[in-house]
Image 1 (cartoon, rainbow, N blue to C red):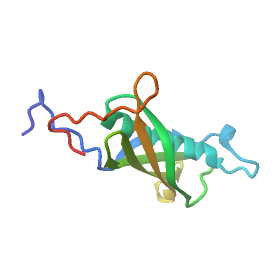
Image 2 (cartoon, rainbow, N blue to C red; image 1 turned 45 degrees about the vertical axis):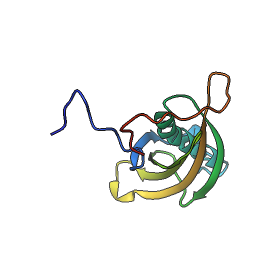
Image 3 (cartoon, one colour; image 1 turned 90 degrees about the horizontal axis):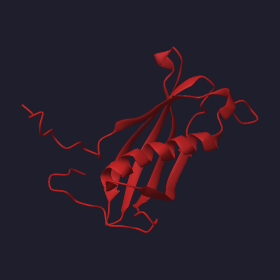
Length: 140
């Protein structure tokens, strides 16, 4: 049994729900589908939640290693973004993000919408790279 005063460290390399948001009409492109830039932005924010936790502070996005759009996201879709850490270096963190979309209220309509890999760098207050702390017991 886990001691509530000393919880087990969270595994940042396991998939976790990072963001859940409904795609809105203001986020559409000229064809009425959700604009790819909106999806990329949401994926970057989702990935950064993992990177911030691992870096124990501020991070900056430095690369998008991969971004694949699999199926369109439509207005009104409930969009879930799941993220997990792939690699942690001295100053950088690679995070994988999967985007899932579902037409409300039909759970059978859930589909894989996009996949991405982002690289973040831990930065100090002046925006310069800084080492990522490695506390005892941190699982990555």
